[in-house]
Image 1 (cartoon, rainbow, N blue to C red):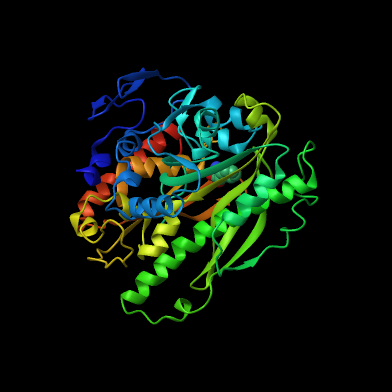
Image 2 (image 1 turned 90 degrees about the vertical axis):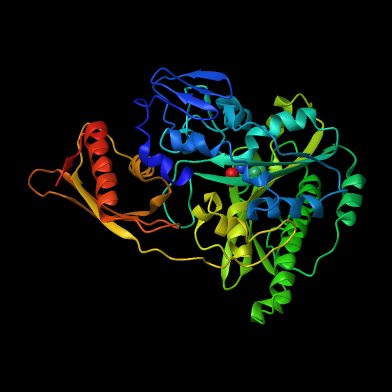
Length: 447
Ligand code: PHE
């Protein structure tokens, strides 16, 4: 069973273990019969490899799959080809270079991204597939849904694997009338939109691409924004309908849906924005987007006479809100008390089945001056040994010794299972392994 698996696996590089679809040795990692030789970039722990087989977005009775199906059905007939089966291992070129990521972009670093080796990695976003979809799609638009992976902190809303849905649309340049018609064809919504940039999409912080006219930018971005607003509206309206049907009388159910647009930066779009949705008292960031840079279209052999937009929606946070899921780890549980609550085509509120107490343990240490310890390295060591029982990891104290100049850190780890009680003995064992791993691999000195 997945929940206990990570407790038994060895740290990266020392592992020699067979799983259903992958094998990991110190020399290479084999996934789906393809072997990736390890090198100084390799940083994928076995518990991450175990996630790539899960494909939650294709499970019609799972919140992620239900949300995916809902968006797909709301957008059907609008000219988008659906792709939802791309393999998560991509090249550095697909994930970064084809999109014009600067060489020193932090997303490329080993502390943020899972690498098999210097050329292969787990995609960090669905945009990694933009180029192949621009090349292959026979329709004016496409939608890509996939699991994506990022080394990240550990808490209730962050998990190293999550899901995105990418959308894109393309037009030949010179037929602005077609874009106007396509804008008219997007179904209207009652949503309240705050958008200081609708009529002035270009600002000092969010420059135009030189080859585009202001008229082109306005039309492409209006089509983009109305499409995103339509998707957001359909998803949140469906959630409200379900809540009303379930007898809820909360105030938010009768207020019109509010969204706002803010400026953003992505290397492969310009100008770029994000949409935020006002939901139960908070602004929720849910989708980055923009006018696709011409270089991406040139890289896709589409020539310099096309106009295009792209967006990327994060599905997990939205699904957490819609289904009332308090902890992102629940998406990955194999406990049937979770799974039996969800059914194809239905948005319903999750009923917590039990709450087991957490066990907190601190790890305090002096850092080694010569070996850098990134907080994501520590998070990962905890996840490698504790698996999904790592509920949260927080840096609670940090100081530099005035005399020796040595740096001290203290992290508080909350071990908590969603499915059962953890024993002190078991947690002590795991915590010892965390400390040992830190000492051996990062030369820290436990205080
Ligand atoms: N890939 C971006 C992200 O992960 C989102 C995005 C997609 C932005 C497409 C612009 C265009 O945040």
